[in-house]
Image 1 (cartoon, rainbow, N blue to C red):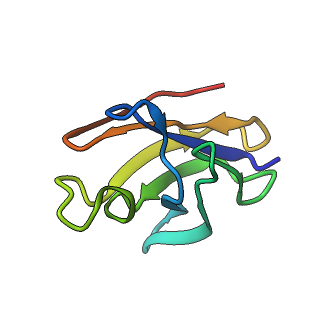
Image 2 (image 1 turned 120 degrees about the vertical axis):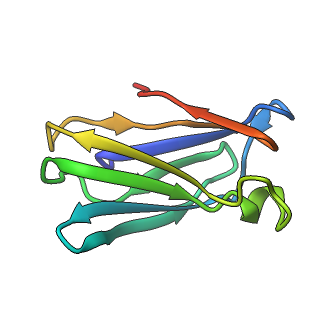
Length: 108
């Protein structure tokens, strides 16, 4: 299993958000470096996003929410920045999405 996984739930419609493009990026001295990309499955999950271990540091998940909500989406992108202290511990970072709001938390 990937060290980082995510789950996108469409809270306005009460269902998983399918086919949302997601990118995992790592912070570097020169900006951001791509680590992995994927799409949510029929259950709104990306189970295989990157390696099984990562160096401790700051990472972000970038969700192309316009691909799911449409090109006129109020939030065309949602970016969640987080820190990995233990590069071998699983990190689940869900996104709860609606047309005019989104939220996140550290999942299990």
